[in-house]
Length: 153
Image (tube, rainbow, N blue to C red; front, top):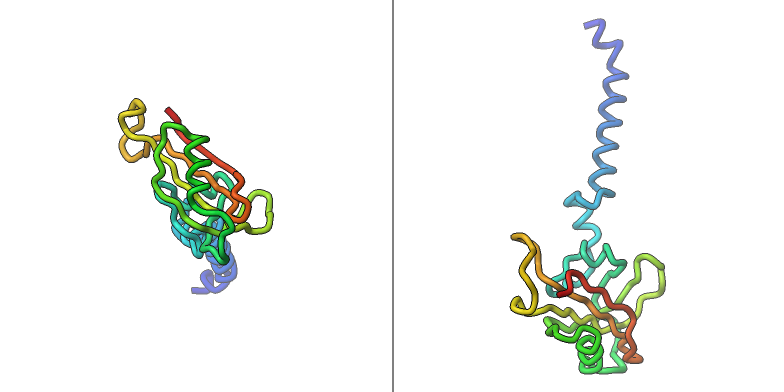
């Protein structure tokens, strides 16, 4: 028992370091379920894109807070012009945040584009999606903000 009393401080220190390390991993590692929940909190879901996918390309979409100056038809027109051959899966009015440049949020139309399975060779493995794109159009001016595509045919 005497030996245990002398080493209680060291054991307590090891336990505290392990707990702090685990807590940091839970909050900051992108693979952690807690981190994924915290990053997705307050965002909107765009069809075919997860919060992690959008976060990887510096896009954060939150609920819109304003009235658009341009219509969704203009955004659809821009998206189909950029990605001819694709079809529009979803159009949504959002507040767009560029997470890499820390710019002010902008009211935007988010357009999710996909391609029919017959238009590309299905070389993807099970669980992976086919080609997809996201187009963000400024809702007040109707001009392209950014577009990103993955796995184009």
